[in-house]
Amino acid sequence: MKTKIITLESHDDLISVRDRMSWAKTPRILLVAPKFEKITLRQADLKVLQRHASSLGAQLGLVTRTRRVRADAEELGIPVFESTAEAQRAAWAQTPPKRLTRKPPAKNLREKREQVQVREEAWRAHPATRLGAFIVGVMSVFSIVALFIPRAQIRLKPITETQSIVLPVTASETTESVFVTGNIPAREKRIILDGSQTVVVTGEGVVPQSKATGIVVFRNLTSNAVTIPAGTIVEAARDALVQFVTLEDGIIAAGVGKELEIPIEAVESGAIGNLPEDSLIVIRGALGLSLSVTNPEPTEGGRESSSVQASDADRARAKELLMKSLDEDARIKFLNDVATGDILFDKTISISQILLEEFDPPAGAAGTTLTLTMQVEYSARYASASDLTQLASLALNASLPSGFRAASVSSNMKMESVGLPVLGEDNSARWQLRAERQIIQSVDPAQITTLIRGLSVDEARSRLDESFDWESEPVISMFPMWWKWIPLLPFRIEVLTN
Image 1 (cartoon, rainbow, N blue to C red):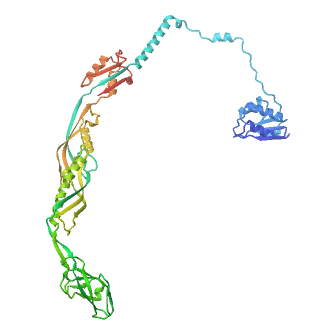
Image 2 (cartoon, rainbow, N blue to C red):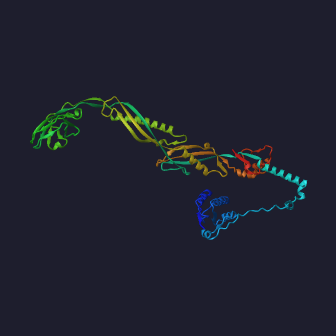
Image 3 (cartoon, rainbow, N blue to C red):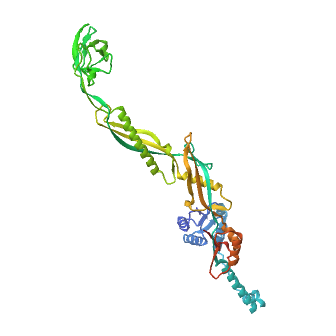
């Protein structure tokens, strides 16, 4: 008999399977659940599919190895097979669905219940037993209250002492960190100062008034014409600083010995340009290979006048006065700029570099006063307060007495220099530092709690006085106030030290 085989997939549900069955035109429809596919069809879904197959005039069969699905199908009368080949060979029986039958309730249930019920023993119902149980319950509640409700606060004032130490300190530029031996870094600070100083000029000098002029004669040393441009420089052989320039362009005719006369003027003003005849005999540049030159007449007209000018002594005096003032300003500024607790090494204040040095009027210019303007960078070394505090802490901790600890207040540390820093040959500064602080006796709250828990208030106070030395008598506060015993639980005891 023809059979429509429908292979189920894991995503199939009741609706999708019904739609696929609707296309079947065969008298038998076989649903195949693959071995490794998880089929989610329930018994109610199989019942709906069975009815849908009947409406199509077909009989529904199932191939599956899942025990739950096989059991549900057998209860509904749906034939179940191991494989599709077995389903096609075997005849499909019309198996009626299994009906669940319920057994009638037993008639002797009341008798059985009475037999099973355990009767309470007589002693448990006795009034004395019940009273004892009540008392035990009340005592249990009281014990819980006694454990968790009371709270104790212990205020202790441990012994405090002053710890003091004097230690040598060496501040060096080569040290990078603080060592307990007393070596600390020497920090450097730089500042820039501006200043000016005016002094009255005491020197004398001359001021050039006009330039000397004259005439030179150029002589051709070649057979070619030579062009002489304006501005050609000629100078004296005895003094190359005395130079003249030609004022006009000129061309010497070709031929050895040809001559050309051209006017000249001194480059610099003053009497230095007044020269005797035949003094200018040097031509600067390539023209000196083709021409010779001389001044047949003296050069004249260079004049100068005497005036008041700054001398080297005036400039040195102005610089000395200004540097003295800047040095003092630098020291004051360094002292004002260092932080509280820093130690400045006065003898290390020095000039790092001179950024600007300018005289007005400049050298050679006339003037009755001379003003010097300078910008100077200064440097100085110092010991920082943080390094000194760290050094003092290291030294004090190393000598801390047993059973004591440093007070927690950060301002507790006090430091004082003993003597002034002395600079050594290696530029390191050496001096002594006195440091002191308050230290307090160490108290272990856990030890105190273990010592007094469970005792009466008076006993706890006596035991604390016997076991430790205090600056004042311990104060024990209880909550509630009428409670007279220290709690047994450690977390209900608070230990405060001050």
